[in-house]
Length: 422
Image 1 (cartoon, rainbow, N blue to C red):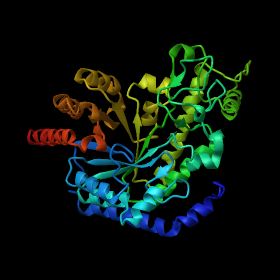
Image 2 (tube, helix red, strand yellow; image 1 turned 90 degrees about the vertical axis):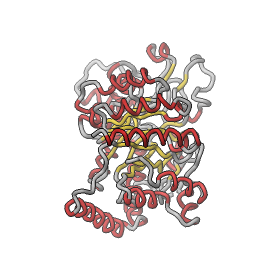
Image 3 (tube, helix red, strand yellow; image 1 turned 135 degrees about the vertical axis):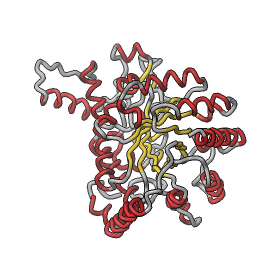
Image 4 (tube, one colour; image 1 turned 90 degrees about the horizontal axis):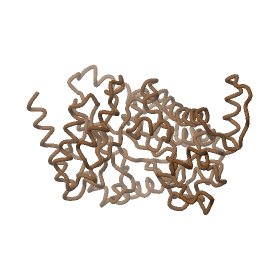
């Protein structure tokens, strides 16, 4: 693979001129459509569905699975389809910077999953958002980004390990026997400039190849949460300690005019935490800015931890700031719980009285509610009657079985009742 700095090679391989012309024509068509046919509009009741790339069902791996997927979305009650296109370094679109074997195999079988989804969805007034897992490579040590950038791209802990050394979220034997990360897998270092550049190329390939997309949806735009609490608070255990990150931290302090700086190999405290937050924020800002510049009509959204304090201080995912500054357009809160009372409590805490309420989607863990149909309906009702933009269901794989189809039927019935009462 060529040096990732070779931007001209990327543009050449993507047939830049052809794609840009195609994109401009499409944007003009959309503008004209809304001017000439103002009745063409999306439903007020927004219902999104996450379609995972590699769940229990793999909708894009074979023609047979893809046919099941086509039947699932055709005439469905969903207004927004969040189609996963990048996970574990693998892409569902043509790419020089990801393993696009899945896409190439689909093309050999005669279909382009994302192209079909966009055309079918738009024919039914639905939106399509391309879902990208940003910083978690999961277990794929052969991911192109890791092969290209090496171990320096991976988060390092304060015990002398990077996350590729971990097993089941735990570091090799150390003095901190209970240390672990909450979401196991290999995570990338957001402070690494080459990681940011590489992810930009991934996003650029996506939006240039599919200019008709309605949005790009980021997942894993955060750091994994570290445990146990006492080890973190006593600075026995933490993440983000690459030499480059620590160096950049102290450089930033000096630029801010800080004095009497005592340099440590493993810094801690509120200033270090804010630095870590800023690295994730800067990554999301850079990618969002790229999307908005190249494809202004595309919406940028992000899946987030609903507990804002936890998200901001432990996962460095400052989603309220992202909404306030317009870095992202929408945030999808993953409020996954079986109970109705617990769902309402988390939802109300997330909504608060903030200006951002209308920019939120309430994420419902449908897989938890397959045997709790009334709870599912109540969670949908609470979401729909709140100030939020809508509701999002996780996920396609969980709703494809018989129990899942019953939930879909309940959803359709509820939406029909709600519409009739207007």
